[in-house]
View 1 (spheres, rainbow, N blue to C red):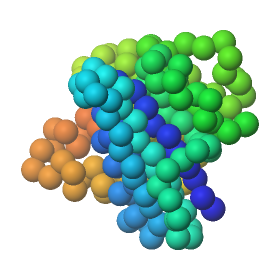
View 2: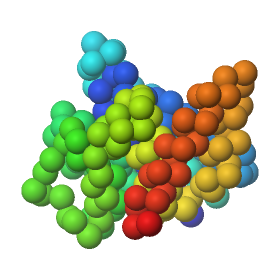
View 3: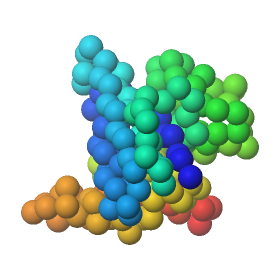
View 4: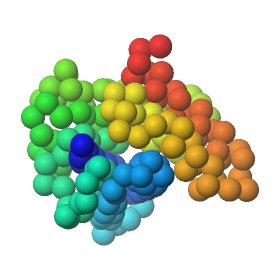
Amino acid sequence: MTERVFIAGAGGQGVMLLGKVLATAAMKQGKSVTWLPAYGAEVRGGTANCMVIISDEEIGSPYIEEADSMIILNQPSLDKFSGILKNKGLMVLNSTLAHSDKINSAGTLQFPFTDLAVEQGNIKIANMIALGAYLAKNKVVSTDSIVETMKEMAAGRPELLEINKKALFKGVQLADGK
């Protein structure tokens, strides 16, 4: 099994954190992993993306030419990168900030992640809601491993852990239709 995940959004939306949490959790499960971040020239507010490859085998290159799955958090990222999603791949789309008529609805999860994050009281957790939705449909990494990774990254800040856990499970519930 090899899963190639392309994650993109605006600088400041937590794209790199989302990718790092996913990659670290996969490593905890004994998978081979690569994480390749790329920042736009503007950094905060400009485009940001990362490529995460998770595999049962050794990975030759961290670069993704064709993604099995994409998590897209804004319109410029959708416009720029949607062409690298393979046919019948999974698109997880933040419908608050991105819209397209060209997306195959059968392979697309569209939820207003940013609006939901605001409702939860913190716009910065939209990335974790999106991660939860992705994991509900593609169980390449367990939510337990994600939560363990979050605990380590938020060490000494229990309030961060709780809001991010809540966001993760909100995304899982959305995608599961609960």
